[in-house]
Each structure stands twice: as structure tokens, then as C-alpha cells.
Amino acid sequence: MKVQKFGGTSVGSAQRMKEVSNLILDGQPKIVVLSAMSGTTNTLVEISDYLYKRNADAANETINKLAQKYAGVIDELYDKPETKQLIADFLQERFDYIRSFTKNLFTLFEEKIVLAQGELLSTTMFTHYLLEKGASAALLPALEFMRVDKNGEPDTEYIKENLATLLAAHEGVNLFITQGFICLNAYGEVDNLQRGGSDYTASLIGAAIKAEEIQIWTDIDGMHNNDPRIVDKTSPVSHLHFEEAAELAYFGAKILHPTCILPAKLANIPVRLLNTMQPTAFGTMISNKTEKGKIKAVAAKDNITAIKIKSGRMLLAYGFLRKIFEIFESYQTPIDMIATSEVGVSLTIDNNKHLQDIIDELKKFGTVTVDTEMVIICVVGDLEWENVGFESAVVSAMKDIPVRMISYGGSNYNISMLVKATDKHRAMQALSDYLFNK
Ligand code: ADP
Ligand code: ASP
Ligand code: MG
Image (cartoon, rainbow, N blue to C red; front, side, top):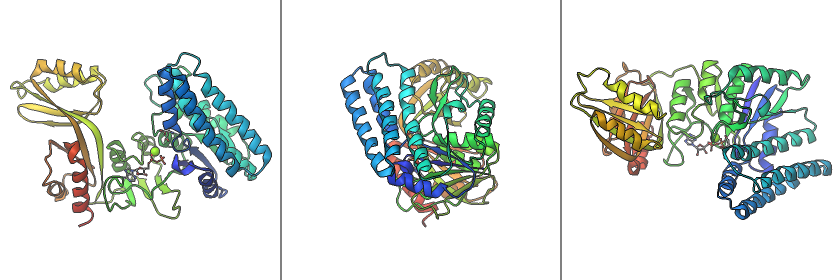
């Protein structure tokens, strides 16, 4: 069985949903994971912001606009008056439900319910389109099998068991549609896998059913060798190792959610990135195969803060790094990059929520300096230390750009450099020009 995930743009209009149906109706058994139609989750976030601020008028106005947009899809998507009526009633009921939140207390709990509506809408609409076309398909409610534990980590045993039970209840059906992104938490409340998390849903399902392949269908022909939103002349990378893809996703390649690779890697299930608008393009194949001696791609992670702790006592003081790390641990702030010298240590974080507290505690160990508005630029490929010439190529590409930190050797797949946010664009372009387009 395959898992095929279609993102927001891929199901963003009636026309797109019809195209997706043509792609999936090939008789092969599969679970299809859908995101919300593009723009919907952003609008639901906007509605939630109004609800938090108790601005019921603005919330209602935004809800009405969204409802109108959805009503417009019905006419184009369905042929039969019965289906049109059925979906119109369904939409009415869902939007009335969202409106009901304007009357009561609005907390994080209600927000999660509001954010879940996008995927509930898209999957119900799409499944009824398939049924109207005469396909045999079943909707699997993600809230009946997708669950995270108390730490927000996927509850893999629960997912596996409940998904198996649901699949077994549909004998004779081999096409299943389900919601990406949404899940229950350990307390049985509606929750989600973070923005962009439908990719994660797909890989968790893939691992749970031991799928032969997980396909992520989006609006571009695979992972490009640099961010196409920022850099000119990028091109698709045909093969990536799981580790390379995970590094790129973690360091900002938006095409993949950062957590999506791990379940696939652990279960050794290949992940294909494919383009809904150009289905015959090869895209990117992510597997456990390494292409020797190749630099594959560049990605960038924004909103990074660099912290330097300088201390004359560092070198001889064993336990120094542990004490430093414990401070970050106690504020639940993960560290991304780290560089050490005889007199100090520099590290980076991407979450400034507890920055001031962390700085105050670090000051006990030395002089602390902080640089905000930095960016990590990450170069990914076969960067095993015994390969020669790759680090020098990366550094040569960056010859005109001030680099605050470099980290190499943490894995065999990455060199990371920290630059000012204002240098991000030219650093990424310089790397593309030097490494890929010379
Ligand atoms: P979906 O809605 O299908 O999940 P996303 O918008 O999350 O799609 O991801 C696809 C987008 O990721 C592309 O349109 C592209 O602009 C962006 N992107 C950023 N970096 C890369 C990259 N290295 N390769 C391909 N796409 C990238
Ligand atoms: N709809 C959700 C979002 O926009 C999840 C996803 O698209 O992956 O973040
Ligand atoms: Mg996405």
C-alpha cells in the first residue's frame, strides 16, 4: 500500500481536487492524506486571533468570507444536486460550529478545534467527489487513530492499532482518504502536529502500515538545490539520503516538515516528493542510499540568536559545558549550532522565549554576548570528513560574506554557517552560483 499526501495548493480549488482524483484513481491500494485547501489554515488562525481578542464582529466577517469561498467550490466540484445539497448542509453545519466560538470563552483548547476544521472540510468534500464519480473510497477520521502522547510525541502503538482496526472495518475498499495535521492529544482533546504537519501525518501512517512508499505531492517538482523563493536558477535534486532530507527540512526547506523524515527513516520507507502540476516529473527520491561525493542542496533557517559565553576558566574546568547546557535544558530551549574555543563557547537557538532568563543565568559563568537576527545557512550532501575539497568549496563560495560561526563534523551530511539575516540572500545565491551553477 502507498501513502499519498496532497498539500494545500494541490487541493486548493475544485479544479485541483479533480486533478488529484485523476492522479489517485489508478486502482492501486492507498491512503490519501489531504491538507486543508490553501489559505484555509491561515484564515482559521486569523479567526482565532480575533476570537482571543473578543472581536466577534471581525471574526464573523472573516468566517463569512471563508464560508463564501467554500460555497463557490460546490458548484464547480459536484454534478448531482443531491451531492451539492449534502455538502452545502455539511458546510453550513461546520461554519455554524466555528461561529459558535464567538459566544464563549476562547482558549488554546478551542483554537485547536478551530484549526482542525480545514482538513475536516477538504477531506469530506473530496471523498464525496470521489463517491459521486462512482469510486469506492472511505473516509478515515484522523481523530480516531492519530494521537500524540504527553510529550507531544506520536503514540506509534496507538496509531498502528487503531489504524489497523479502521482499515479492517472497510472490507473490499482499497482507497482511503484522511486528514493531515490533526490529531488527539494524551487527554483526548483535539490537537495538531504543528503548521505544515500533514507531511508528518503521511509519514506516521506510512510507518504504521509499513507502506511501500510515502509520496508527498506538492506544487514543485521535488526538493530543489536551494530555496526557489529566494535564489535564482535552482533545480530539482533527484536523490537524497534520509539524513540529507532531514537536515534540509530541519534547516528550513519548506517543502518538507522538519519531523516528517524520521518515521520513514526508522521504517526504511522511501519518500518521494512529487509535483501535482507536473505529475510526470521524476521529483525527488529520499531513501537510505547515499550518492558519494556530491553536495546536494542549501537551506536556511531564520530567526536565529547566537549566544557567546567567554570564560577564562573554561579549558580546565570539566563540567563547564554541562552546566551551560543544563541552563538551556531547564528553559526547554533547544540548541542548534555550537562552536568551542579555548576561552569560550558560541551556540545558537531559534526560540527567544526565555532568552533573558537564559542570559542572566549564563552570566554566572562568564561574559555573555548576544547577536539576534541571524540565519543558519546549511549546505547538505556527502560531507564525510575524509572527502577532500568540499569544505573549501563552501568556504570559497562565502568569501565575501561575514560568517559568525561555522559548524562541521556534527554529521556526515552538513556544514552550517551563521550569517546576519541581511546577508542571507546573497549568501544563498553565492553558494548556488559557486556550487551548482558554475
Ligand atoms: P504544501 O502546501 O504542498 O505542503 P509547501 O508550501 O509546504 O507545500 O511546500 C512547497 C513549497 O516549498 C514550494 O512551493 C517552495 O516555494 C518551497 N520551498 C522552499 N525550499 C524549497 C526547496 N529547497 N525545494 C523545493 N521547494 C522549496
Ligand atoms: N493545513 C495545515 C497548515 O497549513 C497543515 C498542512 O498544510 O500541512 O499548516
Ligand atoms: Mg507543507
